[in-house]
Image (cartoon, rainbow, N blue to C red; front, side, top):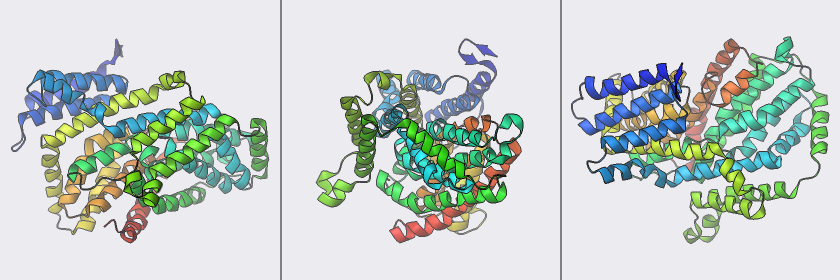
Length: 488
């Protein structure tokens, strides 16, 4: 039931939570009134996002308004509005916004489809080979596709469906298990892994970079190249395992697919040779990767270092100059502008919760409860990460989950004695890998689940299995890899 643009029931719940924390719940000892009142606004905002009271951008505008009007961050009205709008000056937010606009070129030029069909033409002789082709395709486009929903649901999923249909596998006639069931699960479970591998592979990742920098007093600032290098080995191991694990748990009825290569080659033939616009996209793609990885600075010295967000603007500028993207394309990319607005609001609120001491207080509560168990830091961190990870059963948004819990759990882990960079990388990986759990875990899941190839029971079973596999790889393989790299 809606009133105007608001869903009434979840709206009333989020309002009740805000007012209850503000006026009813006693302010704990050691917490300032402003910090507690900002927490009330923050909890109400997160509840509204989870309940989908309004579009997330509209909720963000309300949050900015309430922070400015209530003065919880600053007694001065002019200072309060400056604080409320401070998130818009965060360069990481603009990095994601611009990267989303750049990724529009993948679909506009058809380059995303070409990549997918190319790898299927190479590896599509067997069903498991198609699984690996979909996986490699997603990995290739992940660094410049900050919307994991657009990548997994908008680019890879249509390719997967067309392959399944070509083998007569349709959920409507009960033939999903021929091949579509398997491919849909692979399609989905690769998405969280590629999201964990690059700062620019899913929108909330820059939030994590910000939280880690804030918690360590900017002593640790994870760059694009550092994140990509750290996630390289555990990510590739997880990608190698997904098609095999899904195959073992839910083997498809069709094992050999020689026609898939023929189908993919036919699709490529229909597309014809690469267009000028596609070649420009490849050039921009390569340029962004080289600059984001810090290659000029490595070869020529620190004087040639380029800011990550400035690189994104350079890529967009090239696409605009060459006409691959028009200004109309930029204006029409609603998800990018929506992301900039809601990210700015959430980063602003999370930043001031930290400045006002609320995060430190909550992390001490978490740390104290785990410390009472008497374990050394490795076991304590395992418990901490498991709680953080599996709490995602109660979230329908990774952004809401990360914003609500990451900073406090990271601070708690530091207090438990965990190496700062090891803990940050482990929680960063978990923040994407937790998408595997449910059919509502992130924007990609309802798209693929909604296509009907996989039952809810199978989805949840596979999700839990992959959660254990992925966490084990990230914690063990990743931890050893980070030790070799000297990160802890």
